[in-house]
Length: 434
Image 1 (cartoon, rainbow, N blue to C red):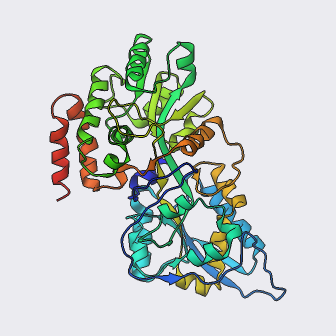
Image 2 (cartoon, rainbow, N blue to C red):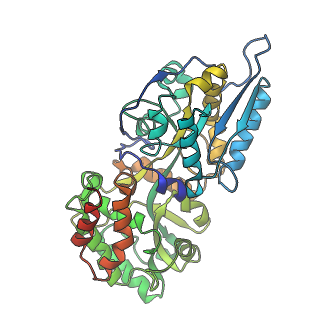
Image 3 (cartoon, rainbow, N blue to C red):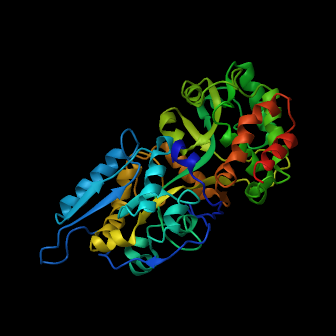
């Protein structure tokens, strides 16, 4: 998922095993529960009755608008559904995600009694106000009843977005985090793609001699992914998922060691994240730790992606990967009743493999088993990374106190330049939680 979605989402950390994007999660207790009402089955959108259907109108909220990656796919989905169901009118009530505009609007709508029938919104802690409003349906009955439709969801993906064990949201667009690497730079210079710390240090030395930045990283804007992957590598899932675990300081110290060995560009403390991405694209950097949202910009450049489990003494299972879902489909009870079940019908249709494939053609990691037209080698490499992962967990930056995590990444430069120790930084951050 692209960065702007992932970084604002507070998700429940989860473990996944073998199957694509299989995860499990839990959250807080909701204010109320209402079961989903009966709706037409599977992906069909045409009316099954010969009798003219009653005209209905409902609102659908999302952040698929303006320059968003999925705007065109979203607008086409609404147009096609309405064309196949002429009794339905859908009001596209989308708001940009930038600057929390969407989050503010959707929360205000639910609080004021102006909630939409359908919402594609954030899950986890950011989605908590929607759940605790008591206005949402749950999907368990429909998932159980309509197996032709529900079989296309990975169970782990469904579990990942549950709230207090209930299925208020349906997962859709996910993400991964890993280390991109320019295969041709490694191959052309006979440098081994690192699978352990010694090999990483050897690659750093070799690329420095070639005047190629070993690892592109912006400590000014987004060292999040470097921090998260190193914490997972050092502490394993258990240490990664436990805020301020004893393994965190050694993980940060390894970042300091890389900095001292000139693993990053000379302007790493000030360079922008987009410039780091460009270094990779221009073959001026060999490695870049980021998420699936960077894949589109790096396609066609003989680039692949792999997990980052390279730290000596690390407890992570070698295939361990960070991934998850921070958004999903919601339907309100009133909106579904007022639309005679068309709100649920629309969500089931848009989550069908056929329609989902149109969304993932333009980006994202699918929670649904679907054919993605024109899938690139890099996209497939990311999917293979997840398929091969025996352990997958959510980003630590999204599961802990945000003020504390922000303090960690913003002050990491003091650690890598020797002005603070990693225990001092973590102690400062931990105090912000209390």
